[in-house]
Structure formats: structure tokens, C-alpha cells
Length: 139
Image (cartoon, rainbow, N blue to C red; front, side, top):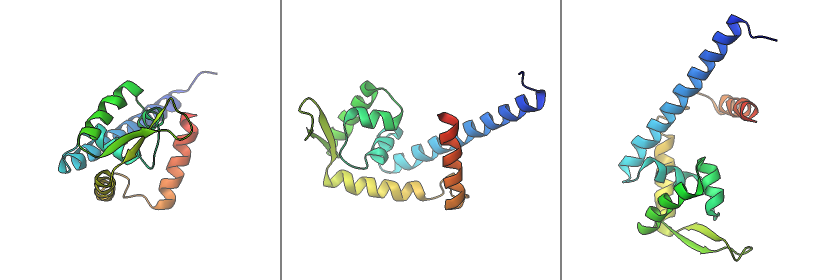
């Protein structure tokens, strides 16, 4: 079955909207990160560190290679925002754990990211629907 011209146009427009939203979110993260003395990738790492996790888990959440995450984590560790600790269930692995300073900065970051978010115009129900649709699209 070949796509009709209206289907092609609709998909192109949808892809454009998703790309625009992605760019707006990236710009938003970058602008907020700068106010805290962070780069956008560092802010993304802090946002995604919801608890102790391995480098691989963090890289998956950041949608990047572990080697890229390692560079970012090295910088955050140098700033005293996190530590690498032995993994309790896998002696070959290390866990990334936020320090008190890192936890405090992460809290400030999350507050800033909520302010004027590109998704703020959507209700919680609309955001949940968008998330559900995007999950279905990427699977």
C-alpha cells in the first residue's frame, strides 16, 4: 500500500511539530542550566538521576553512549555533585549517587525546568496522553 499525498503531508507536518517541540525543550533545558552554572548535558544527567543508578542506566535515560555520559559524570563528580560507589548487587559495576550538594542543585534545577516549560500549556491529562502516544510511536 502506498501513502497518499495527504498522508505524506500529515506525517511531514507531524514530524516537523515533534522536531520543533524537541528543539524548544532542548533550548529550555539549556537556558535553565546556564543559570545554575551547568551545561545542558549536565542538567539532563541531574534531571535523570532519580536515584542511585549505573552509568549504563543513566546513558540509556540520556539517550547517549556510556562514553559520552562518562565525560559528563566526570565533570559533575569534579563539582562535588555526585560520587561513584560500589554497586550493592554487582561488584563489577559502580553506582552514581548524588551528594547532598547534588541533591540540592537537582531540586533547584527541577523547579527551574517547571517554569515556562514548553509543555506547560498542556494539562496533566494532555501531557499523559501525549506521553502515551509518543511511547506508542517509538516502540
